[in-house]
Length: 146
Length: 146
DNA sequence: GCAAGATAAGAGCATATGCTCTTATCTACA
DNA sequence: TGTAGATAAGAGCATATGCTCTTATCTTGC
Image 1 (cartoon, rainbow over the protein chains, first blue to last red):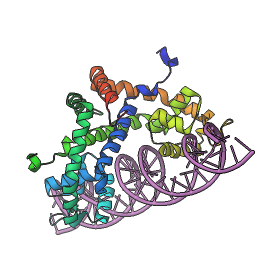
Image 2 (cartoon, rainbow over the protein chains, first blue to last red):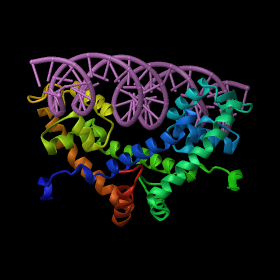
Image 3 (cartoon, rainbow over the protein chains, first blue to last red):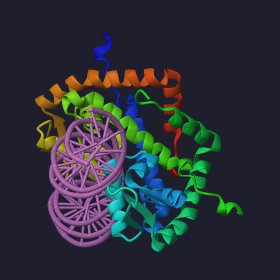
Image 4 (cartoon, chains in turn yellow, red, blue, purple):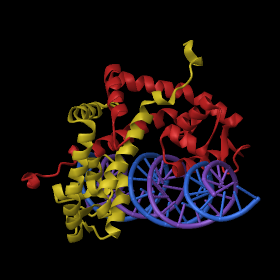
């Protein structure tokens, strides 16, 4: 290993590249959703709930691939804002089921076309082919033994 | 647009895909750097400073593509931990120059091989070709008019 | 040389993310 | 059937990120 003197180029860092892209695309989607007051993270939770009806925190966290405790906190914010409701699971006293409130359903319906427009613009800006390849690359990304 | 009834599949969301990848790769790099107590975000700041010698907050934020105020806060933490030092710019009273302390240089030297190992393992896990294509896709990503 | 606009950065607020520790509940086995 | 190990979630702590508002300083045109 004689190249220890080679300068570290932070632009070579794969992690930095992905994090940077994440910040940028987040701002882009957040800006599109802004009229609803939702952020993309919140919208995805509402969308997931709209898809599955109701779910406990852990499965929802797994579904969206976020840390369990992080999901718990986001759920707390959404509950505070009256967008979702939590009720004890009838079959498991440890678990609480999350469901959309009427307000949540309304917000989701309002935000969906804005999300679609963000998707559309993103794909227009980047080219459908490039987006597809990027998605392919991300989907295959491995960060540990499965 | 008659397909409004089509279910929203959160897995179709480009933003979600990138954010998810960002969380995963961040955990991966953070785990590698763990022996030093640095996270990848902090390591990148040290690496940037090691490259440029010293810099004010705004240019450093631009260099790393993070929001100015976010950089300010990270810099505050690093200063608190004695890893960097801030001194007033001799030529501009509004600006403060950041530079590594001895401890910062030591930490950077200690963390660099761990970062290199993370890069190596990441490329081994994903295949050099796939990583190259992913980087290419991220580099080209556009989220607004330039 | 001064006032108006530009710029560097801090303060305050809010969300997002993840870690560890703890508590409550459940399940399975002896 | 009672207890040991598994599991769902909350609490507490810390960093990361971005927004708006404010303050201090600089620059430029007059």
